[in-house]
Every structure is written in C-alpha cells, then in structure tokens.
Image (cartoon, rainbow over all chains, first blue to last red; front, side):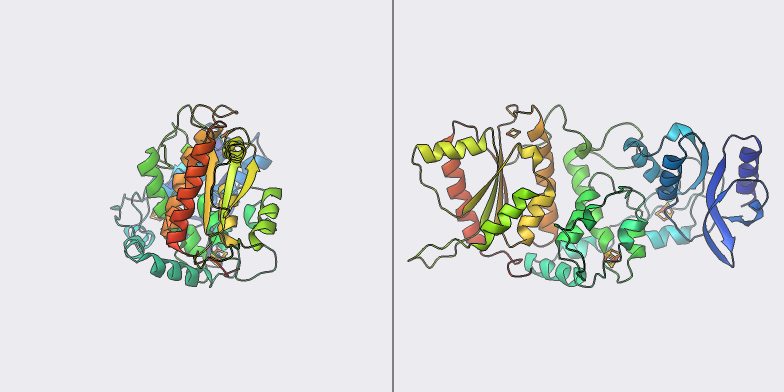
Length: 264
Length: 157
Ligand code: SF4
Ligand code: SF4
Ligand code: FES
C-alpha cells in the first residue's frame, strides 16, 4: 500500500499525471476516487472490493482528452484497458497504470485465471484459478432442460441494468438494451431471452471475464457463464482472446479480408 | 427496424395450409437484395415450388442483418430463421457477407447454449441466378424446422 502511495505521490508531484483514479477509504468503505494532489493520499487504499475503474477512466478521458491520468489496475482492469484501447475508447499511451496483484482469496472468489497485471507495484502474484464454474454443468444439460433453466433464470431479472453498468466494456452512450423496439420499456422482467442475449452478443470478442456483471446482479443470474461460453467460442473459431494482447483486432470489429469460416 | 415491424405483421398471420395436419413452421428469411432475393425471384419466375412457410424480408446486404434482428425474430415466435446472402467473394459491398460468415456461427452457439436448437438458424449463399438452389434450400430448411417442431419460444411473448 505504501509503495502505491509513494508511486502515486511521485507521479502527481512530477506532474506526470493530472489525477490518479484509485480507491479511497471513506467511512470504512473503499470507493473510486480521483486523487489530484498529494494530500489525501493517505486514504488511497488497495482492497478486495472491486469497481469498474477503467470504465470510469473511459468517461474521464473522453471528457478531458488533453489530460493524462493514472489508474490502479488489477489483472482484469488491465485486460479491459486493452480492449477499450482497441475500441478507441482510451489511449494506452496517454495513461499511466499502476499494477496491483490480487490476493489469493480474491482470485479464488473471482475464479480468475490470471490474477495480476503484466507489471505490478503491490502484492504478490497469486495462483490462477482454472475451471469454468457452472459452465460444464449447464452444458451437460439436455437442450430443453437448458432452455427451461435459462428461462427461469432470466425470469428473475429486475432489469436494474447492473450488469451493464458494472461492465468495464459497456461504454455506449445509446444502449441497445434501452431500445424500445427490442426491449419494450416498462416491462419487468424484460422479455426473455432477448434482453440477455442482446447483451451476451455484445460481449462477443470483448468480454475479459472479470465477473463484475455477475457480482452486480442482485438476483444471482449466472451471466458470466454465458459470456464465458461465448469467449470459448470466439477463441475456437477465431483464435482470439480479449484483453490478452494490444496487437490484433477483435474478429467481429471489422469485416475482414477473408471469411473465417463457411457454414451452410 | 422497419424490417422487423414488417416481420411482426407477417408473423402473426400464421401460415395455414388447409387439408394438412402437419406442423407448419413460421420461418423468417432475411435475404440480401442483390443475390438471394433476386434468386428467390428467379425461383418464382421459373416456377420452382417451395413451401410457403418462409416469410422473406429483403435487406440490402446479409451483413446488414444484425444478430438483434435474428434474436427478435425468435423472440416473436419464429420457428426458424434463414439468412441468405451472396456467395463469398460476390457481395455487392465486397466484404459484407464476411461479417455474416463470422457472426452466424457465434449466434448459433449462443442459441445452442440457451437451449434453442442451433439448427433453427440457417445460413446459406444463393446467387441471383440460382432459383433452383433457392427453392431447394428453402425446401430442405423448412423440412428441418418441421422436424424440430415448434420453437419453445412460441407463445412466450
Ligand atoms: S478477476 Fe482476477 S484480476 Fe480481476 S479482481 Fe478478480 S482476481 Fe483480481
Ligand atoms: S444485473 Fe441481473 S437483474 Fe439487473 S439487469 Fe442484469 S441480469 Fe437483470
Ligand atoms: S450484398 Fe449480398 S451478401 Fe452483401
């Protein structure tokens, strides 16, 4: 923690950044905060509480494109930054990241394969957690059983938009989930499965599997499992893993020079 | 979105074939105007027979068909959706159908994971001169959907 504070203090002092987006401990709760001066940095903390910091950063940088910001990044935050960069939503060259390796406990809770960013100032790298969670049991179901399972799950939705709001990669100013033709307003639960499938399709080739959506969902719909499944599909069909490398483009983000796969 | 409003109109008029007890599926066909729709026209002009279950919706390019359209069609109770475009390399907009070729397999996987048979979604390439092929594809696809039976989403909303 001290290492982080010292690093941020130095960056701010040298005016390498105009502000640092991290977590501030207030009334015992860590929450996102933009530190702009050296004072107050004693409240800058590292905690197992997660927020879509990079999503906030995207808002910030689009509002103040001239300023250079620093941001605390965990493994998943860094992966989301890479995808945001490819979508021209942030500019990695215009950012200073300060890495934090997650605790083993958090890695376990997140079911995280790579619980640390490429470089980090704080923490020790924890061992990655393998396995797809509920994925296998859902895949093992018979088709009609699976249909009923999802319809029941989606029937719980209270349309709070928490999944979208917590997603580091949902940055659109106009959201399809609010399109009145596809998702009629004033209906709860929203039409199933379309509401959830629209969102699912929007994660294709972009979802970095941080699990914030599922963590945010107040009714416990296993949303991440759907996006995880699509992640596997994208990896199998196109050999692309979101958030892994700055090079390469997400397969559905361009028309392409050649078709990937022909299907009849 | 107008195309879907159109689909809504057609889809409520269930296909009725008198004197037949077999299941008559509702199939939405998204056809690109330059090849597949022209192919359908060709089938008509050359008097090829195919089942009337398909409700064709003409779009400018198969790449214009968003997964949203497909999902909406299923949500509205379509038993099958057939997407048809120009053969690869022949798209009027050069590479529009490459996007189609990338998207559809992913949508299929998504449907399958949701417990909807991926066979309910078809992708095919039909050129403007392939009237015979269009008729054959539609016959085959309709048969396939007939065998699958009504979509579990029928009557959901
Ligand atoms: S998903 Fe991984 S990197 Fe992100 S908070 Fe959890 S353990 Fe850390
Ligand atoms: S977070 Fe859960 S309840 Fe809220 S909109 Fe998303 S799926 Fe529905
Ligand atoms: S114009 Fe026919 S697929 Fe693009």
